[in-house]
Length: 220
Image (cartoon, rainbow, N blue to C red; front, side, top):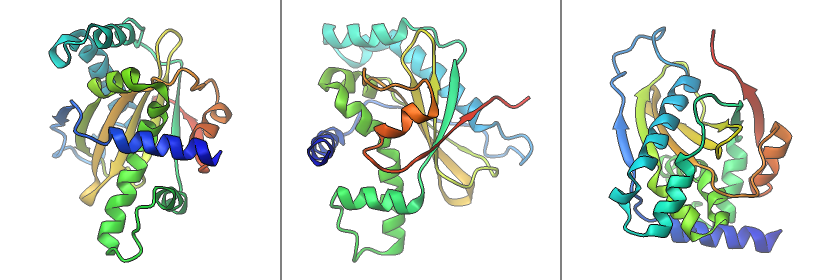
């Protein structure tokens, strides 16, 4: 288990490089408390943008192999999720992950520690994708979408995992910042051995870090 963790963390260190990302700023900063879209809806919109990006693989890479991987992602049916799961990690467990990554934060300020904890939380899905191989990891990076918006109803960082009958899963990580500003980052989950037919199937993929996984439903 320790060797597996070291390999994944090493792969993650390699891929923490500037990726080709579509950054979108939502125009919702003036939305009222009651008008804010739910995370479920925000995540769906991000997944749709990710799906649209697969049609433009040639803009981001000249590699025919990479273009083929991206096109295969886009061939899936993302119209309606089969199930959506919310994945949360307690602060102490994020801190444990930071220790595994040898970040050496003991002497850091509380503000810097908080910043790094957000970075670690945001890295969970990247670490899973790091097990999929270089081509698939790069393809996932090409299709990554980022968006910022305000939602006063959200107080904790969370990952929404969207699963589909005939498409690869998509994960959207929501990180809460100052004044309820939410930074969202969506990525396709490319690791073939990642199984997500239930909450219990999802939990083991987080490097032994305890996570809480619950199914979520659209608001009616």
